[in-house]
Length: 288
Image (cartoon, rainbow, N blue to C red; front, side, top):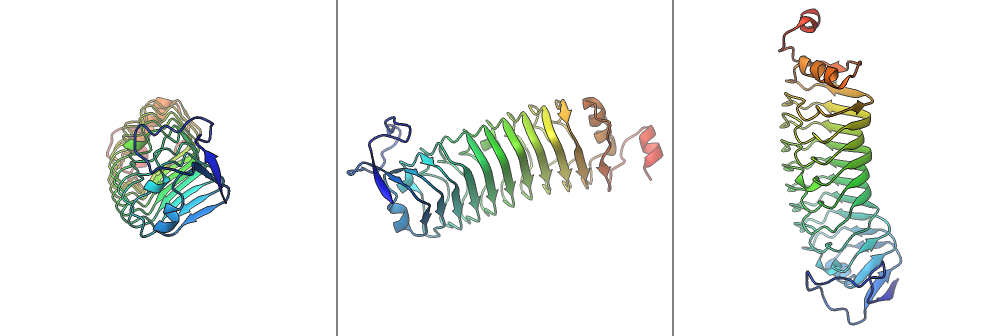
């Protein structure tokens, strides 16, 4: 159901339209008090002048080329899902969105970036997966914290710079199966995470970009990163509850030992195959 919202935004302030020229709203701004699905451009146009959705917004619209009819939308009390919307190239139209619970962006064949996404600073759940042309996370620059964040199976995602203001992930940050990702630069503000999982990232050679990370309160997982040759970037960790390194084929075992000694971890968890291209007593006693 759509209700008249007058001319105020959801927090009672006047909506600032000075940065753009959104469509006129002769009947005032509107509220929607139910879960909403967008399957066609007409469904999207029906949300012009909606400022708040009290429920979920699910956009599954193969023919929608942009999200501009959502230019007034400032709050979604539930979740935002954008899936199988194969004509979208970015998030233009969501520039006023400041409040949302979960965000899922998946299987959008033409999506190249998230440019246009609004000033959301916190999400409970972020899933970005299966976007065949997604090269960048630009557009998420306001995001500072989250509960569970998964970025996976985006085959041309080359960098993470859109996450440059992310400071804390209270459950898990998982970055996996992104075949073109060669660097974690962009996570430069990340300070605390419960579990950090960076796996199946074949071009990643080091972890530079994580120098601000000081606490992993549950587990650090590095696995099946076939080009990972250095743990550079992890030297400022002061707390790691546990860790699991597995099948990082070219990472010398002495790199783990040196890192473990640097941050004061007693446990040893390097799993074969291990690269013994280093010198010392441990290698003499344990390498073939």
